[in-house]
Length: 410
Image (cartoon, rainbow, N blue to C red):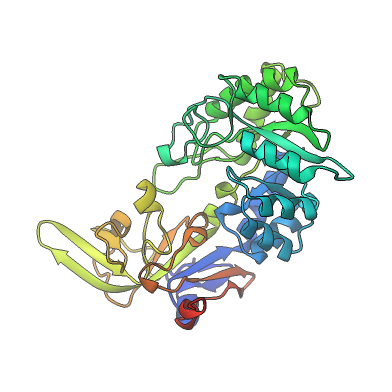
C-alpha cells in the first residue's frame, strides 16, 4: 500500500490496472499463489492435488504443477485444459459423479494417475472400457462417511443424502470395493472422501478419518485421500485453520484411529489455494439512495462474475482501493447490472461517504469460484484475469468481446 493509501498488488497500483485493462477485472497475486502451493506441498508430503474447479486456466495449472502439486479434474473440459497446460496423465486425478464413456476413455488414453469411482454404474463402465488394457487402471473408491461438515447444504457432500460416492453405513462402499477387486483390469489402491466445501472445523475431518480408518484397514488399502474443503475467511471476524493445522489434525486422527502404518494420506485443496490470492475490480456506474430504506452502489459486473452470494448467500467485503485509509461509515448494498433483484455482490458493505460514479470498487478474496463459475447472463462478456508479480502484469485469460458472444451461433 502506498503512503497515499492506494492499494498495490505485486508492485502495481490496482486502479492503474483497472484503467489499462478495464473492469470487471480479476487480479491475482502470483507470489501469494505460489506460497499457498508451497505450503500445501509441505503440509501433505504424501501428495497433494490442486482442485482445479476452484479456478482453472492454463497459467494456473502450470503454476500448480511447477510448485509440485498434481491436479484434480472432474470433466472432459478440465482434463483438456490440464493437458494443454503441459500436465502428464500421471499428474492428474479424475473425479465426477457421472463420468461419460468419452471422459473415461480420455483419462485412460492419457495414462491418468487415479480415477475416483463414484457409482456402481461407473464400475460397470470402467470394467467394460478397461478390458484388455496392458496395465490395470488405478482407482480410488469415493466413500460417503456420514459426517456433517457444518457448511451450506449446497456444498455438503459427506452426509448420507448426497449424490456423491458410496455409503459407508449402508454397506454400499464394501460392496463396491469387492466388485472392483474382482476386475483384473482395475487396481483399487485407496479410499477417497470429500465432506464438503468451506469447512472451518478440523474436527469434521478428524471424524471422517475415524470413520474411514477401519474401512481402509479391512480392505487393505494403501491410500486415503481426505479430499478438500478447507474453509477460507471472507469477511471480518471469520477465521480458518491453516493448511498445516488441517494436515496435522488429519494425520493425528489417523494415528489415534489405528489407520494402518504407512498408509499414504493425501488431500485436494482448491479454494484455500486461490481464494485469498485475488481481488475483483469494478467500476461504479450508479449510486442510488432510497431514503430511510437502503443505499445501492451499482457496478459493472455482478452475478455473472461472482454467483456465490446469490447461490449460497456468501458474504464479502468491499472497499475503494484508492482510499484504503479513509473511514467507511456509509452502509450500502453493492449490486450488479443484471436483471435480477437478487443480483447483489456485497450486502451491507461499508464504504466512504464520498463513493461516486466512476470510482473503482474492489472485493477481496475472489480467487475461488468467481471466474470459474462466471456466465454470460444478459450476454455480459466474462472478465479478464491478470497475474501480477514484481511490478509486471500478464493477462492469463483474455476479456471476452461482444463478437465472442456470437462465435458459437449457427
